[in-house]
Length: 188
Length: 198
Ligand code: SF4
Image (cartoon, rainbow over all chains, first blue to last red; front, side, top):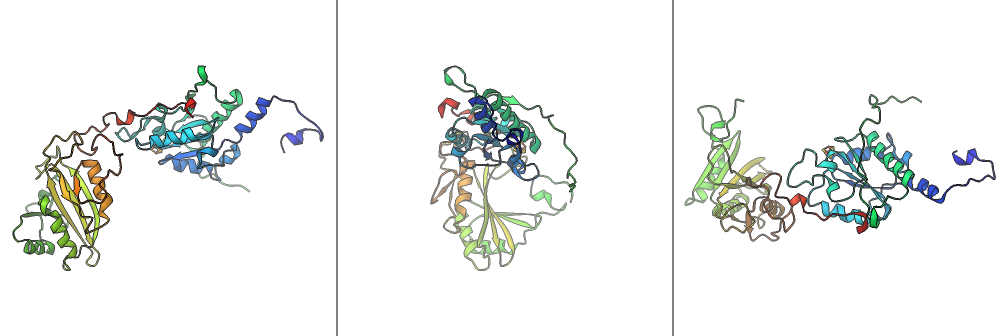
């Protein structure tokens, strides 16, 4: 398969402990789906067979925050929901990352009303913003891959002075993939 | 279908007023001879307009009288007519949507309320009170809670008169038309969470 095939039978590799931990971590990002609106449907599509988030090790979607390390906020967050979101975020175990998926989670979108929080990043740290209304599954996968690249390069989330951790605030450009005409014909 | 004006009476065919031939109008009129009602109709949907104090009695009659038989309360909605283009009887309205499955009939009962206090707060206003119809249709419970939450119209004898969509301490009734659509900073009032809090 991968590494084993490339090595002689009794071979070994040397590496850094940090690297091997990061390798494991990046390939087992278990999402906590905080799907409150239409973006959640696209999040489900991302995990389904056509787009298959399992290719990136993130198929184990956990509805228990204790078992998840990647929160995907997909949809509008209402004022009544924000304390819930914060509590779930706090319950997730470190190291943890947050993707803000779609216009609504990132900015409130078109819902500029009394009832909708204008961007979850005001109240919880967000690492990657995925633009779109809704973002295509490819784009969300790009967001997960951005988190993987962060893990690869920095290990556990970087800390500011005093151990305080702020969101990375990366925004995808939205031009990272080619959209092919759908549906894609299958060849066997 | 021609152009419509906001007024119910003018929206039927030109020259004709609303068609008030729904049989329930006559039944209510006959049963409550001493009370004042008005009525209107729009595209076959008839609305009986009652005084706030009469609403519960009339609704009870509509439910229990076998000739009416409105055994299903489809909805209770509140309306704020502030700034409405044409004149209305009062500022707030509560509309009861009734259904009779046996006759496949749809009927509306509407009552108007005028506030006696400024409407920008959440102070209890004795003028904005109606009798709850949860004793007639238990399903009215959540719908009345929504009317209360959104418009501040309270219901007497309601079994559980709490807000339903916003939380208990919410400082406004947000569907009132004098409440700003972006709210009064309620959406900004959360603690800031960072990763050291976990
Ligand atoms: S960004 Fe668009 S698709 Fe996503 S929750 Fe908002 S309205 Fe729905």
